[in-house]
Length: 218
Image 1: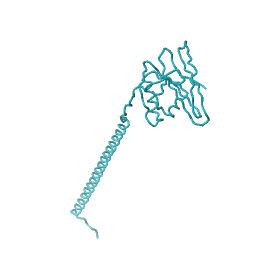
Image 2 (image 1 turned 45 degrees about the vertical axis):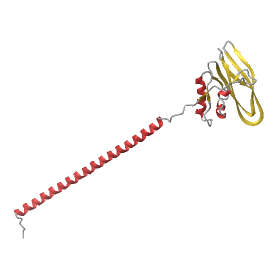
Image 3 (image 1 turned 135 degrees about the vertical axis):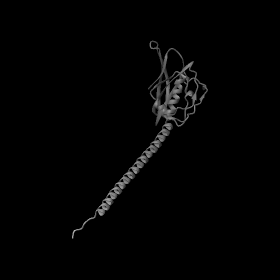
Image 4 (image 1 turned 90 degrees about the horizontal axis):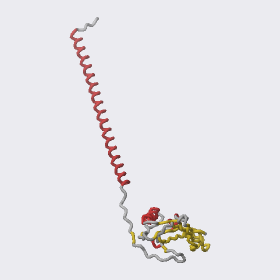
């Protein structure tokens, strides 16, 4: 027996199929719309998070930079009046050690073997600063004024091993052609104590046209 489809049935079926297609397309559009909406929200949130993190890092770096660049205020070292100076024992020059009384062992050791000349207030300040910045001394050095209009300070530091070191004046050697004067001192190490020693000598000499220096020899 053959089944006959009525035209009305076919029309209804076609309408239902068309409606189903439209519903499916609408659903797909809705899904796509929702997907892109959530994707856009995710991208926006990610960008916002990046901006917040970057801002936090920038603020932290700026704070760190300010901390590094801005040093703490340092107190200005006090400078005392020039101490009373007397003639050195056995040496025909004024003893200037009271101007640099508390240069410590480790710092003096770093100066051993050098002839030192302090010709201006700036030179004396530089020596004080060098001692403080070296961190060799536990306390800041005591600073004094000095009359550089009349005198200059010449000195040297020697080191050795024993009980003590004596410095004996030998001579002042003048070179009129080179316009130099060298104060020669003989070093004598006393005893066999095994102590590590440093011995500085600081002399105030009157200004002249000669370049002054101190030489220590054995």
